[in-house]
Length: 278
Image 1 (tube, rainbow, N blue to C red):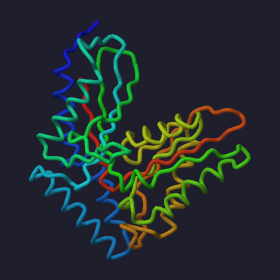
Image 2: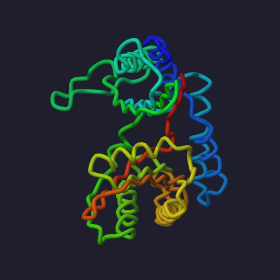
Image 3: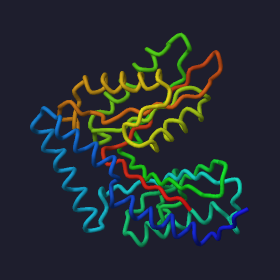
Image 4: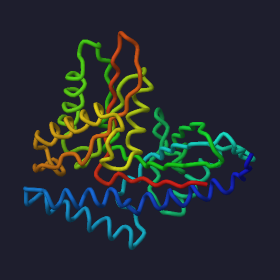
C-alpha cells in the first residue's frame, strides 16, 4: 500500500490547472497545423494561423488561451493500492481553487438559481475511477461553455440504428454552427443509460486528438461522422472551409435492448487539457 498526502495532490492539480489554461498540448497544435495546411478557404486558413499565433503568445506570456477559462472537469484514476491520508475530493478542489487564483484564470462558476459567482471556480466536476496499481492519474479538462452549451443527448429507439445515431451527431454540430468555435473535437457516447452516455461523451475528449477507437467498427463510425460533418461546410468559426471538426471520438457501452442512448459533447478548437501522474 502506498500513502500519499493530500498536499501533493493539491499542488499537482494547481500546476496542471494553470498550464491547461495557457499551454495547448502537442496533439492540438499538430491538429491545427494540419488543418491549416490542408484548408482550401483563404479566410479559414488565415483564422487557423491566428489560432496558432494566439496559442504561441499565450504559452510564452503565460496568459490564458481564451477568456473563457471554463468549468474544471477532472478525471481521477485512483490506484487500488494507494491510500490518500485525507480527503481526495477536497485536495483536488483546493488545487483547482489555487490554480485559478494564482494563474489569474477567470472564475466563471456560479449558483444555477441565484447566478451568484462562487468566486473560486469551484466546485469542480470530479469523476473518480478505481484502477489497479499504486499511482493516481489526474486528467484536467477546463470546459468552456461556448462549446459545452452546444452539446446534447437523445434516447433513440433501437430501430433508429447506426444511421439514426450518425444523423443525430451531424445535425447537432450543424445546428451549433459557429457557437462552439470550430474546428471542433466531437466526443460521442453511445449506449449505457442516460447518464452513462453523457459521461462516455465527456470521457471521449480525454483521448489524444484523432486517436481511433480500438474497435474497428467504432473507428469506422468516427471516420464516417467526421467526413459528413466536414462535408457540410460550416468550417472554421462558421465562415466556411473544410475543417468544421478536427476529430470525432466515439465511446460505446452495452445498453438495454429497448434503448439507444446517444450523447454528444462538443469541444472547441483549443481543447485545453493536461494530465499528471502521481
